[in-house]
Length: 362
Image (cartoon, rainbow, N blue to C red; front, top):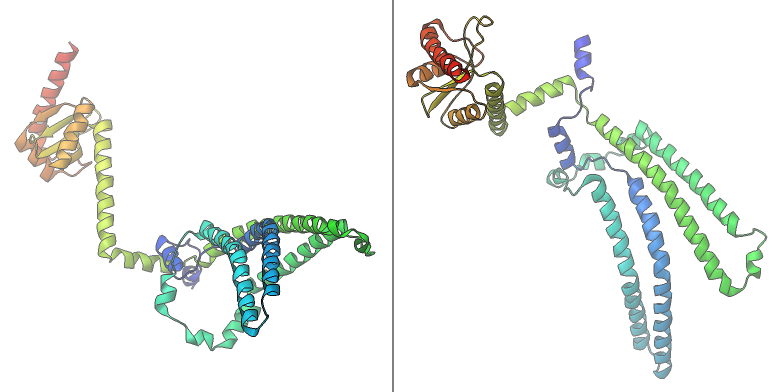
């Protein structure tokens, strides 16, 4: 029972395959608060900057429209045309601002999760059972740990933002209605200051909340996608049966073997026996330390050529003995001692190598 319970407990980190499947379903780690912070700060600042352009444009438009309306008879047709002109003019002024804000929001989404399409959301279609099952929705809304967390976070945001707004308004505006005594030309600048400080402080609060929420969402995302030991084993079984995965694993294995072979030549080989071009076998032998020579690398064709190149680069002697090279290649695996029937032939090669080395040294 203990093994079963342990196997069902989600203790293993999500595999790349599980992460990719979650991404295709649209399940990614992102914080909505980051988008909200971007919308408040950049949207607020852009709106403040744009207000001047908007007011000047509206003034000039209404001056021109009113002067034209005084010169023509006001009929239903002309009134309709004036209304359409006003709507189109406002759209020309406001649409660039809206598009710019949405562009920043889109950029914040891309920065969090990258560009992706939730393909499984579209291919699966709508889940009508979940749509027409209100009990499931109520459970998710009111009886889950995440719902309680979101509620607590919302209440905290409301409390902090309420305090920030109150402190800013109290700083600039006396509650005894002394604002009414101010000259009219001072009110716009005062409103601009108040709005600017509100946007700045509220935005700063949202940035702090968003950063904390982003780290939490990343943690929650990893926890939600964790796997049981049984799921890991099942996925491994499925992956091993995939021909594409098998081919990739074989390729990786070949690369590792090649790297190991070439490393063995550099570190251990005392001689390389060749065919001369089709076969190459590297041998290691330390007299009085090893009972028999050991094959440390072997290869045919391209691999044989690489063995020869590495041997030449590291000054490892190369001896051309075609029958011996083929016999060693087919009868001995890497890191195995040579068989007894090859002792004499290998001993002759080693004797020749030692003779050449001694001749060079003397």
